[in-house]
Length: 110
Image (cartoon, rainbow, N blue to C red; front, side, top):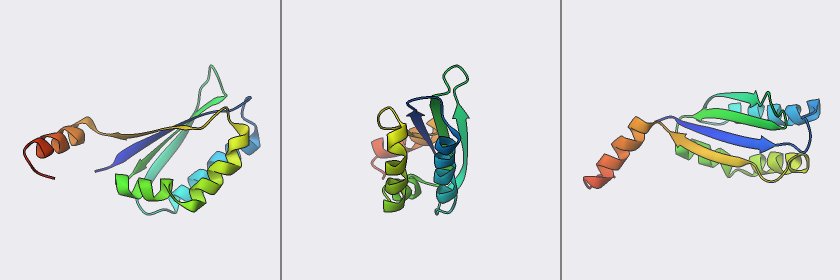
């Protein structure tokens, strides 16, 4: 089951090319990880300080491996000085997949 990961970041000011380059570096490294499917980066037209990255992963396990990696933590630390606070990360699954798991769990399955 694919999972979508939504990462919201708010920059201290309008993002400069080096800020967007830092996000691109994340994408390049993520693309090299097992389970990475695709990703997109969005900038809020009304408030360009808000940048959202939406990535798709083959599984929660693949995402968590990348999310908890030293390499990713290092990239996040490098970007921290540009941001207002920590990024907000949401891991999303399709409603149908969630319901299937919920029904299975309720029936005594995994």
